[in-house]
Image (tube, rainbow, N blue to C red):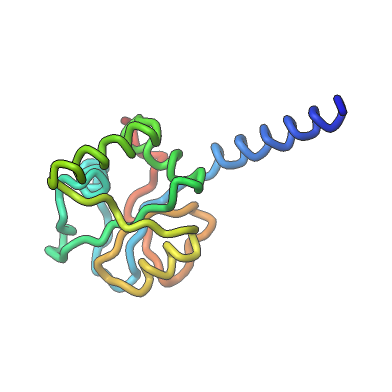
Length: 145
């Protein structure tokens, strides 16, 4: 029993360290015409402060569901906040009628499909999942909340 517990703890730690070491990138469709975004532009888009992309198109922000560890990592790296704080922020905005949170994708494959199929969509994925349909416009390791 003790050995089982230790193995379970070790597996959990390895998962945490693997997720923590993943490099996240903010991505748009390869055909969007957007080349690069600043940290402030990314923050404004994902926190609902602006609804337009630099090319003037109405932005469709796409978030991962709360079950994905990349979502917590994204907001921690981008704005220095825990996921519970971000969820609370969006609950307040929704309740007051001041904004709606990003569309939620169940996993990164769905997020990639949504972004690749829409030139106005923006989201984030692990760098290793980039493919030719997507263009990275901001690297999260650049973020300093």
